Image (cartoon, rainbow, N blue to C red; front, side, top):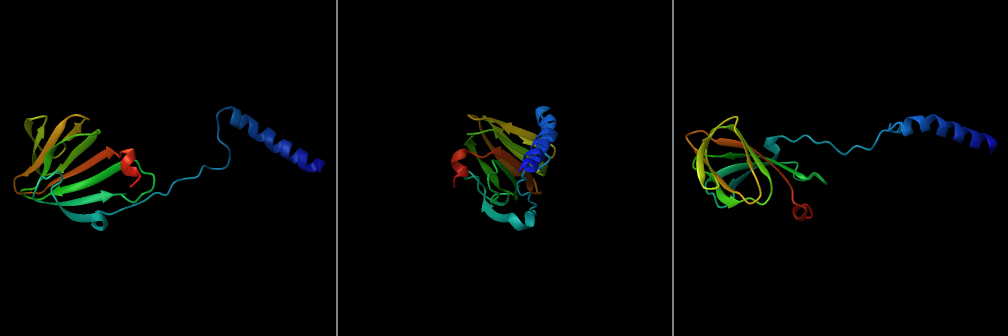
Length: 151
């Protein structure tokens, strides 16, 4: 019994300096499951969101990942398609990958193209319309609301 107590005390003494310096235990922390998804596996044909009209291809990456609070999507707006003008409820970022679009942000119109990032804040309104002959391809990211996480 004394040997077990001594062994336990030795282990504790070896770990104590590491833990007292803010270090972690020698046991690695549990990691969440990492995922890889390809756009061909998640692509769905949809009408333009927010009553924008036209045809789009939506790519909702990691939609089935448990406890992920980030929404990360790609959307291709095919010729004539749009994301309808709507009021924003949370911070949202659009990044233009390719093509040309007409952005309406709080009533002001501007032309956007590859390399353009757009941050819309709660209370603002915006819509995006594909123009030209090529698809308008965008990346969309926003924090998922707690109400939507429960769905």
